[in-house]
Length: 356
Image (tube, rainbow, N blue to C red; front, side, top):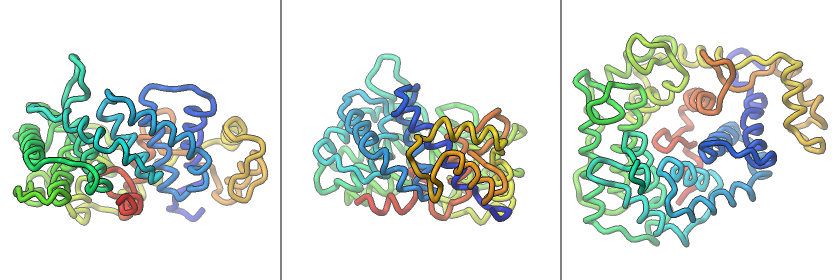
């Protein structure tokens, strides 16, 4: 591996381990759909389509079960639809039902988590709601029905919610009257961006939400880049803010305001370095004996292959934590491969372009 490259084979380990844990070992964790989406998204971004195909049947069964759940929480539904996009899975028979359910979660206060007395709303749910509506309409706009009155209603809800999240400091909070937060940049800009796309898909004559004339917001974004990015001023940097802050800037077409070379070099330095013995043990534990990985005939050979070609085994990304995790690893990969990404739906452009 040349200096300054991603150890793609090593990073695939983290994603494969997750899929095996969720499916092969039947150890279902909390937020299963999120973990599975992140694992598949990492493999897709790193061009490991052959591995995704091995799990295609199990992934499609997960999608089918989830979309038939009438009370799927909105953030979980978002992950299910994202999986459908990555696999190009057709759910035309339930598209109208999913759209109606998603629209029912748009209330005067924003997008609620689900129909539950203890439900809540914040920028995460608002972005999830608009992502779901957009993904359904993008592929099934000629199948599903949505009235212009309904488009006007959710447009107004989106506009009002985003306005309520603007802070006096010129940034975004996660909810009304909240503290400015790095995640607020992307999770408020996504609804603006996708609501405008929804207006186009539905042929609505409603004025689009303006997202480019935000000098104060852009100034706040630029302030967040130190070597990596901070969520709030004078707080530690974290890998995830390369997604939340830099991703928002990419949507706005303002990525040139940041020092991309510094970001890249800092991110690559955060690749988790595994000891050869630990990596060997992990690979042996997670890889079926008869499987081949690339040009390797066995698990020990795979470990040797990684060491020979990369000099070290790098698996996932880590900053302050003790071990790499899917979210922060995917956030780092998205930032490194930002030109290939559609940050408004957290997926590669090629997958989104195919989804129509």
